[in-house]
Image (cartoon, rainbow, N blue to C red):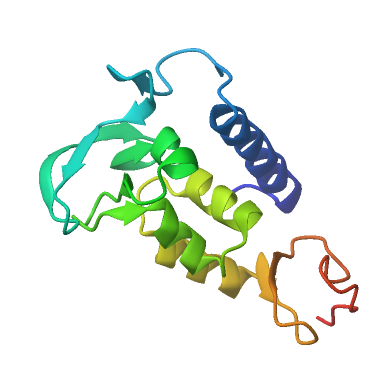
Length: 160
C-alpha cells in the first residue's frame, strides 16, 4: 500500500496525463489510446441507437479494467457515448458526467479522466467517502476538496 505522499504523487501524475489527453497531447510510451477513423482518441468501440441502447461494443484494457472510453465524445459531443465501465453495459455520455458533478466542468473532466473500470457514480461515491469532493454548506456548490481549506466558489472556510 502506498503512503499518503506516494498516493498523492501517483494521483497527480495520473491526472496530469489525463489532462494532456483531454487537450490532445501524446503521452507516455506504449498504447494509451487508439485513434479511430475520424481521428478521435478512443479506447474500444461503442455504438448506440438513438435510445442509448448498445448496438456494438468492443472494450479494450486500460487502467484497471476492460472499458470503452472516448475523450472526443466527452469533450465535444456530450450526447454521444463516451464511457462504458467494465462490469456493466450502461452507456454514459458527457452529459451524464456533468449531471453527476452538478454541471461543474472541472469536476466532470476529472471524474471522466479517473474512471478506469468502475461506474462514474461509484467513483464519485468513493471521492465523497474519502473527502476528495465536498459540497459547500454556504453556497451549496460541489468542489474538489483535497488539501483545500475554503470553498473556491464563495470563500467559506471548510471545517473538517
